[in-house]
Image 1 (tube, one colour):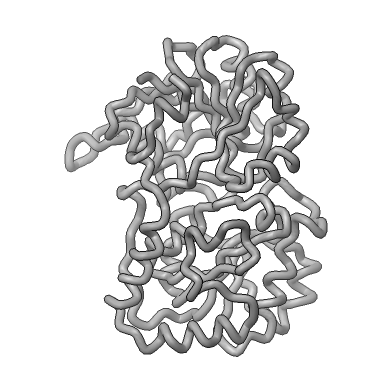
Image 2 (cartoon, rainbow, N blue to C red):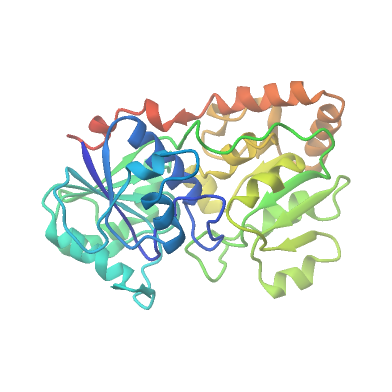
Length: 356
């Protein structure tokens, strides 16, 4: 199977360690591309690749060839492919690279190809302009409540041409893995911005401010928030919430998770109702941080055990006290058991997903 991979809005990055924190999805992209290569698929990157990552792909390292070297690059061409796979991103036409607008490149690819076309929307970043091409396009997503997903993103005008398909969020065994830290400095960590990824301004449905106030404000445990939040919110809460702001490279999130005993997986009203499965819990579990979540998340009990579902600071405090008396090995086992509820990219039937 020949897969053409394009990125909407930004250049493609494949190295999690050097990835920009402003470019969402690198933690997904790296593992997904790795597993496709290992499955024997021919993968060609069809939109601009970040210079540092291009060097990684085109040059063998001191240890010889790596999986990166099996990726092909056609930033301006239109090679023969079976699937055009477009990853979500910003639809801002002002964002451009050495070949022009990233969005215009995606538009040109959609116009040119008659093969199976997939728009991979792994978050709140729709591209409604796809309906204008009058082509059969599948919106692939991780919103487990598909009826709510269609309701929230009804501007796609789902029907005979634009269809949606849910798949569980996956991960790769090649993703970073860190054993739990013997004595992490934090008890509870949240990594993420103030609003859902496509929202510059918060609304009642897409803000995460409420959950921070609920679990991090004047907490009886060491609770920390990392991410981009408005100056107004930080000024309001900084006396009772530990805000560290946006920091580090994309891959540094793993070390931040590793330095926290537990991580909160929750979200806005929209996220809870649509059942969006983000990468944050997988990253945390592979970093040795036990994931806690809220009971009102859609079908959360399929992924997070009842024991780690919380509804108050008292619930969190009780779990933290129980975890602190466990050994590193015992906490690692808990993380591995929770992680086993998630899927691996290599185990997916991709031909069936792509309807080939």
